[in-house]
Length: 351
Ligand code: CP3
Image 1 (cartoon, rainbow, N blue to C red):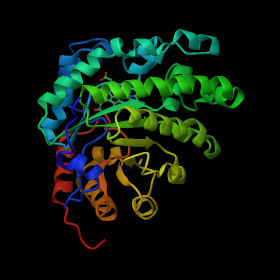
Image 2: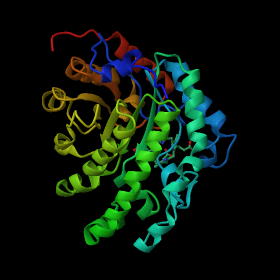
Image 3: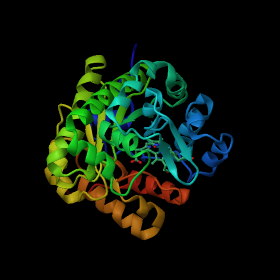
Image 4: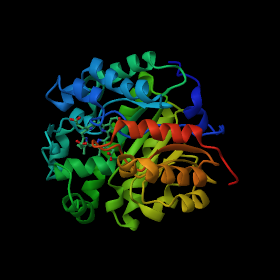
């Protein structure tokens, strides 16, 4: 299987090349803020069925590339396709987000099986194959997965949560059985990412969206260590693949994730100061981030000032411009076009 060589600004930036202006893509760049997404989305009721229809997933992956010319596309899918493929019941309720038949007891782990991943997620891999062929060679295609802790959050809570009390109570009271679930998810995520690479993605991002609900002493065990085991497992199968880690809302504990031998880049959330990140993280590892998604809703001069501040702090080092979290549905698409212009017209001054 020949993977594309590091072509284009995004992949070359991850490989250490510097350009006058950084590459840009946005988390959740495909989604409800785009009228053309809503039009395709309206043709399928079930969100998972939508994810598993290659023609539709391909189309909505390409939409933001056509409109904004981002340096990377991210395959349209969801982190919850992994619990679905493992055999847990997953569905999406309109206006409410994801629902799962919650795990309440370790005796239920036996129902989850990695053996189904390749078949169940074959439409995702087919969408990747065709999307890679349809993209311009200089546009990278990213695959992704949820990190084990974030997946466990949804699998045990059965939905999103304000405080994640159920999953945390389980992790604190019964670390051995919680560890079994995390181990199963490490293996499942390695499989899912390896299949995505084999189908043609040029890099992957691991979303640990809920890492920040853990106290610092628990972070290594339940967030960082599983992510490192995934990176090791994936690199055994695909030694060259770039891996971006996004442990969201962990604050200065981000220092623990500063591991250039394991991760190609760290995606920083909005709560991380650009000045601190430039000093403490960027000398060691490529960064990605971290405009507040709500700045993209506000637009105008407020957004311009904040984007310039981030560029002036981080644009001199290895850097990929992105948001601190995903694009929200109320974002005016014109503000996204304006942001791309700001980033592409930035003139680096003295660092
Ligand atoms: O453009 C892209 O970024 C690619 C597609 C993508 C989706 N979800 C599509 C989606 C990606 C990378 C994700 C990741 C994801 N999914 C995460 C990690 C990133 C993060 O936001 O922290 C998480 C936690 C999920 C779980 C999930 N999926 C939730 C909580 C929701 C409901 C929230 C919402 O916006 O409705 C989803 C549904 C979902 N996934 C939508 C999209 C575009 C919206 C559903 C729709 O269009 O009907």
